[in-house]
Image (cartoon, rainbow, N blue to C red; front, side, top):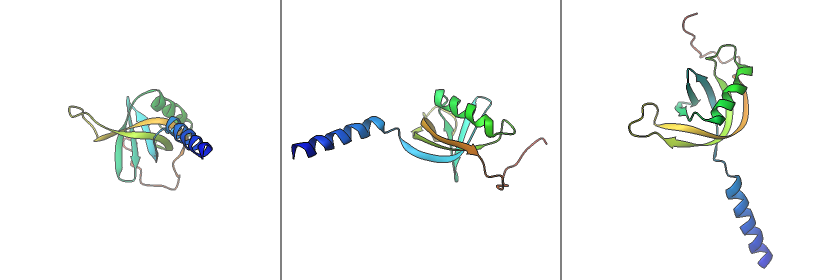
Length: 115
């Protein structure tokens, strides 16, 4: 019985240490000192930190233009914006990058302006 309790405590401790948030999959773009994450009809700003910079750097390999979105899967958390802050109601704070890839080339719902 004592071994079971120790094992459960160990699992709980490890789970807390490795929990880096919820999984989010969607489209990401970083342009002109702003980053946006879209999943379905939900759009969120992105907390601009080292992880967001890392996603933006890796995304360049899949972009033809700087404004092209990429598909990402990350672990993170949604943070409500401050009352006096402009923008979407929530910002995505990225804690861990799971994957980054190009959008489906058959997806044709992107509008390009100025071309």
